[in-house]
Image 1 (cartoon, rainbow, N blue to C red):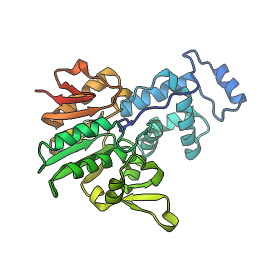
Image 2 (image 1 turned 135 degrees about the vertical axis):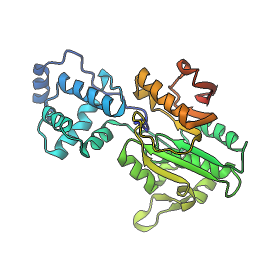
Image 3 (image 1 turned 30 degrees about the vertical axis):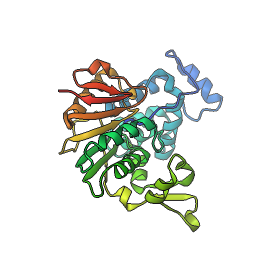
Amino acid sequence: MHAHRQAIATPTARRAHVRVGQHHTAANAEHEDASGREFAWTQTDFSRVQALIYQRAGINLHDGKHAMVYSRLSRRLRETGHTSFHDYLGWLEGSDGPEWQEFINALTTNLTAFFREQHHFEVLTQLLRTRPNGPWNIWCSAASTGEEPYSIVMTALEALAPRAPFKLAASDIDSNVLAKAARGVYRQDGLKGLSQSQLQRFFLRGKGDNAGMARVRPELRQPIDFLSVNLIRDDWPFREPFDVIFCRNVMIYFDEPTQRRVLERMHRVLKPGGMLFVGHAENFSDSRDLFALRGKTVYERVG
């Protein structure tokens, strides 16, 4: 979720297959352990996770996410050698080390694809053609594994004049997916949404041991600055305002007060008249003082 993808989050969360009620008792946990759970898992543990991920990443985990949280954080217990969630969470709270990033990585979901929500790229093409010689400065705030930022750059290279000034900041809160995005290597069967001309122009096909894989060409990678950004913190590193921001399927993880704070900050880093692209399930009609709807999930900065 982007990300942040934001996302974070990025990104659309998978539904948990097991729903555990508010009155989950220690006896329930013991019963579940006996039926095959590796670690004790109580409502108290889940509530602590809810509080910590909200504090660190603004993610609002609802009570239907017990199974997802247990599954993902169990890996962290194994990796760090802890035998209970109680001990692991206590250790986490008592430190400010790299495990916090791993904790956030574990709880953010990254579901993405090249040219996902195709209508956004059609709108972006029209927008870019209003100023074909640039310059353009765009932020993709939930870069995930890179499909979205590379789709934006492909759109720009196809729509703009040769050598038109164009820059893209691609950020995410999840350090693992951001590293994969920067590498720009994908399975060829994940490129099915691309045209033959896009495949030839923008990707190098792997051979030998790399058969079945493809790497983005330098032309596609060059305009992108990959960086880690936590949307709920005040330390955004940007010095120049943006013409366009993509923040798709990130705000669904935030409660309304957090959404409002993030939208206010995005309003500040967007140029007057700049465009904000959001996810298909996101609606910011309560922030009409900041953004006006200009199309299907496309908003314009007002004021």
